[in-house]
Image (cartoon, rainbow, N blue to C red; front, side, top):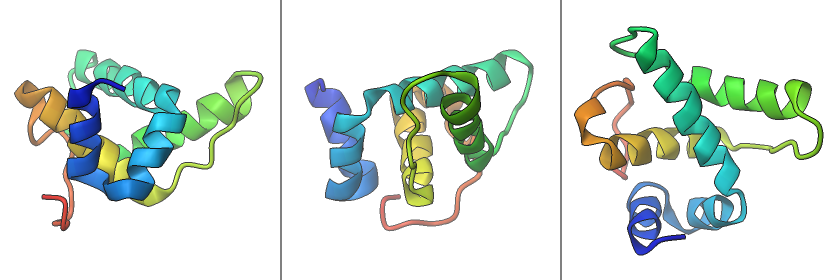
Length: 101
């Protein structure tokens, strides 16, 4: 994980999230992929939880192999990480206030 990605994960999710993110980098890649699909379709806002469900569907039904048990708290952390990494999409996800804000 790059120093920037590590710092982003620490800023948004704490050590449990950091560990999960380091061990499962494909989850964030899927999070970004599905988010950019929503953006390209013209959505101004989208549900991070909806992206999480897409990840679960994709890994549990569509693909063969790994299936992740993604903690719902981590989905919120991924949304914050995405918006910090892609500042042009700040506010794309509507989020509750968190200690990570």
